[in-house]
Image (cartoon, rainbow, N blue to C red; front, side, top):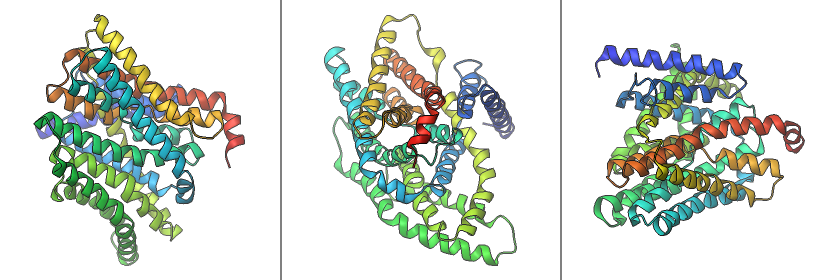
Length: 405
């Protein structure tokens, strides 16, 4: 893409995202809905003005990483650890049930090939925590119990997702599973689990010391964004497969690196406040790009809306996608409003589901009808839950306030 065309596309994305977000808020819906719809309107689903190129996708990745960095800064680690068992149950059941049900329906009821059925189940396991976090933040529930459970579940969910995606990728390429390549991904993720707290502490001390002596403004955002770029590069350098490098880097950065980094910063509340103040303008600039790109990735115009198979297939898989996540939340011991909120918050598939679906399409595993059906499921599970969460908190707001510690 020529430089002038990229500038124009970025200008349109930023202004349209802002306009739709403002309109959504005025209509008393979460701002993220407006940003997602901006992508649907600008992309191939409606106007077809913008196709997200690699540079815009990279800006979107930076946006989601910075959004979750902000979440890490604002997370109470003691409450997060307190919800560990509940998060584990929500994540494992919410991952396993859609995988098993989606595979079973595809393989035994629809008589689809083994690999196609596995990819269907894999696509249904995904959870786009970025969308959920943004909605809960817009609703001022980011510190609530349900938010901590969802955030903890997202850590486990993403680890399982990386493993499954690596396995399916190997299976689609070679017809078998390479333990060596999957081992590289697991080593990469495991290394971050071990090294993140240590690296976070060291980097926070170094940044804090240089910030105290520097006479030039902008040191904090420069060093933090540089860390994002460094660990994105490390994803490839450490030997993870190129297809999975960005996904694994996003996992390591957003879930396991920035969270302990935020905890380390909380040792000095004044410095933590400076970090938050200086990073917020950058976060608010990049984050809308991510949600617009999710909307741009939905090719709704390519769907044959008159196909009975697509409607039956997508409706069945949509029920599986919802039911699998809700059941995982319903089994934990919490008041019902909390369980329902957690279940709904885990439903959005967003960009994570698109990674699975696009891999299936690009590998020739999904035909046009299967791919279209999965896109419908991803679109519905991405766009509907924010409205449901808004309704739940509006309808049962007083009960949530009574439950909150």
